[in-house]
Image 1 (cartoon, rainbow, N blue to C red):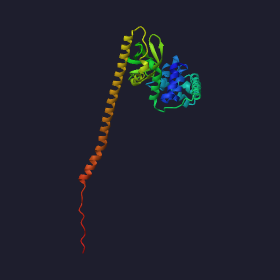
Image 2: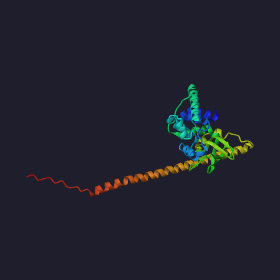
Image 3: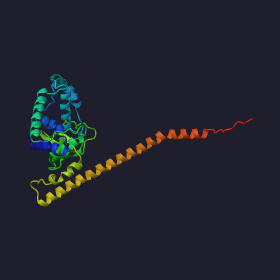
Length: 278
């Protein structure tokens, strides 16, 4: 198994408590591509693929494919309908079972994070932090370690997203006329910064120690600025949400207040007149 994939399995159990999800992702990455695109049905197959997209992660897209396959009885007919290779999915299941058996024999926990998929993305970042890239333009990124330009692959779930993420990690590079990132996941700058102790210790070839320190410092500053921008964006979003909440609350209470005022002003208090005794 690839060292990065092995690390994902270990940390998913020891740190992130998402080993059930990570087992599936690692197994899907260990088999040939599960999607197929027949030349005579390209548009149809692409539309079928997009139904599985998780728009900030190709890794989570693979997880979704496997879960949907299992939920639909693991039938070949379902695979054909959705342009998936049934043999690749069955092989992924075999690998998943093998890894699960190894984990159980080593007393590693098999736990699920449920619907909190941000935990899965953070775990993915821990395995691929050395293969991180920063956005430089629409669909174009720069490798944080080598400064080489890399691209989102057209088949990626992130390729046509309206708001491409600032930072991503990838499984591997595909070298053609350009360098394309394969299997990409959006990550938080905070996560990369937390891994800085190891991330920035990588030595660059052909540069002096002083140049390397300067390069590492500039990368740190770049990440920290990214973190500050993220925090500022989050603050603005929270302020907008609070402002919208106050407006809605005022609107909700306004009719009640008016109604109460009308009732109070129109109420007539009649004096109680006691009858005379004869």
